[in-house]
Amino acid sequence: MQLLEVERGNISEAAADAVRAMIVDGRLSAGDRINEVHLAQQLGVSRTPLREALSGLVAEGALIARPRLGYFVRSLTLEEFEQIYDIRPLLDPEALRLAGIPNEKRIARLEKLNADLARAKGLRAIEIDDAWHMELIADCPNRVLIEMIANMIVRTRRYELALMREQKNVGVATQDHDRIVAALMAGDLTAACAALKQNMQSGREPIVAWLKTRVVAKGT
Image: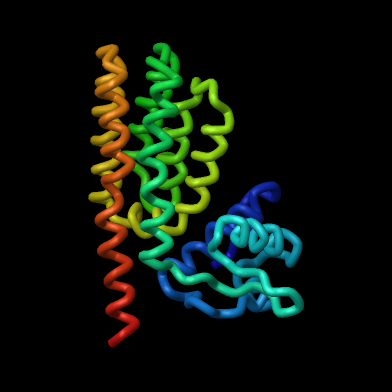
């Protein structure tokens, strides 16, 4: 897995994406110590952007930094997922309520992003989905609320990666988005907020099922 073709300014982000994927698919297991020299060679990057990536992954909870020992992989757990994933169904609808009905230009951007999402897979699907949600609530006047949502997006990304690998789950997301936009275009903010809450909850069961499958697999 080489990242040499990635633009220089995005190397650390690409390295973080690669490490997340390695955690999700099991190439890096819970408790594994990150061998920075080996990983840098594997990804085709220098140590500096890799360390930036690893520091970012510590901040989002994917890794643990231990003084003088290095970075270690944190496990993907049902307990952590259930604690953090149930927060956004509370935050996002409130942000949309405060933002109000978007103007025509924002509606058009939401429709364009959703069309892009329908054709996307894996990490790209997550990036577009995140962009769609941030566009939806961009007019929210409470910037602290926006920052909280942005932080939760980062915290749940390694779980969302497992969800968006399945194209059927991408399809569910795009359909949810269509319902939200339709309600907004009809001027029904209450219905749009309710549809957004449902969208925020729709990924829960597939991820829970995936996490339980991982636990069973490790126990066999």
